[in-house]
Amino acid sequence: ETRFTRHALLAGRRYFLIFDRVSNSFGPRTYTLLLHGNGGGTSGGSFSLTPGGARWDRPNAFVRAFCVGTNDLTLGPAALTLETGEFKHAVYQRSPLLTHTVLKASHRGIGARFLTLLHPEKTGLSLPEIEALAVSPGSGGTGIRIARGDTVDVCVVRERGEALSCKANGASLDMDAELAWCRLLPDGGPECAFILNGRSLTDSRGVIVSLSDTGYLYTDFRGPGRITGHVLGASGLTVTVRGPVPSRLTFQGAVIPFTPGEGSFSFVIPGDGAFIAETVLEPPSGVRVEDVPDDQGHSLRLIWAPSPSEVYGLVDRYRIFRSRSPEFTGPIPLSRFTSLDSLLFYEERHTILVDSVATGITEFTDPFVPLNDVAYHYWVQTVGLGSVSKPSMSQSSVRVETDAPGIFRLDPACPNPFNPSTTIWFTLPTRMHATLTIFDVLGRKVAVLHNGMLSTGAHAIRWDARDCSSGVYFYTLRAGKHHATGKALLVK
Image (cartoon, rainbow, N blue to C red; front, side, top):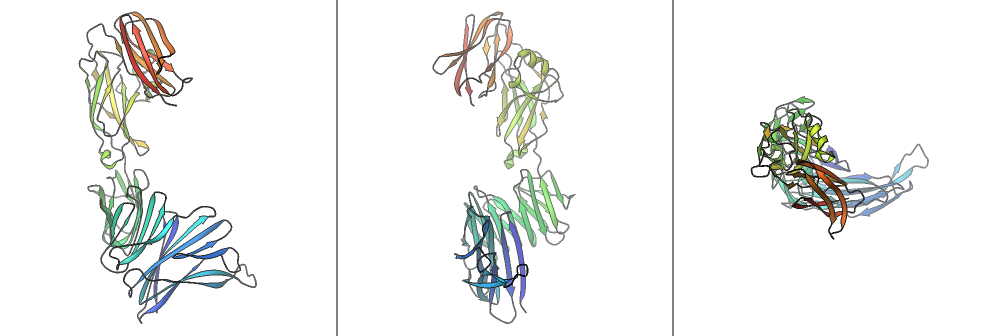
């Protein structure tokens, strides 16, 4: 006449959690959970009692067991009695039968709950830190804390009351489920979460997962731009999950609608099944380009509105592209061009990658646009999640206005920092003799990149520093009465 249910969870693909519930209608009983590992007795291997459980060892692997419990007669964690026994076990009809050592975990109640952690590991590797977890209120239940590296797992059993809370990895969790499990990252945010017979799991930032009625919900936040999960509950149940607003939500492979929230999204399930919420990086918007006044020519400024994906921390950087053609085709980084002629030829029909800027920046000045009075097109692209957005094109093409003649200008090396080569760009006011020299931080001459006559206008000279050591270098341009110096960092 004993009612028994068991739930098993392969928690984060690392270990097993076994949740057992037993009860009867006759009165208090002593309930005993038998944990049988392959070790001890006459079968080989070894067995030892450990705090809160036991350990079974074989030559190549071992299993650690840790058990806590609650019952309806005890406020808070039950005092488990841990004993051992030898059980005979048939192995390929061998005679006499071999024995294995069994751990017995017992406590008394009309109803009782057992939460058991079974953690297998290869011999020679260490286990995470495993201990009982304090919950609040203390009379409401118990739990287990598993700490490995910089992540902490918590698993909580609720015996009585409406909700429990616990603290781990700097986070404070609240839950109303009969069983709740969550893996917490170093910043306290969730990596995976599970609730059984509950409605919600929350922290100080708000909802992690919630249901409009009691059900089962597992959610995995580990995929970049992708949240997966599985729901068991009545048709019409509303599920809310923390995360960026997805671009697409599928349930059992079919696309279903969802409702965006503040830092979360919600959807209604048609029944039990798995869901996938996928987030596609949004491009920046409102890209516009303007000429930079009084800059001696060759500069354009881009301004854009940030990608909506920035709000959810999905953006790493923005890439800036340009071309004299309105078609976005096969971008090549600017740093690969070794001459101005090759750059001018390529940009006529193709796209180049000018530079990248960090997330949070919405303005960029292109310091060296080779041709004045020629229309250039620009694009800005979002980068993050190991993927990229569609490139967002500038609202119109822009020409660099020609400034007064007689310009002498030394532009920043690009790329900078660099490894192993960079390109130095400069403009001469007229045809003249020019010398471009590289010096180290001690003033010693490292290389002479050019020493001779050059025509009026823009020039680009590549410096290959593969034979130089990492460090700061200065490049000096002398042309007639003009003189200018720049700095570049070689990082190997």
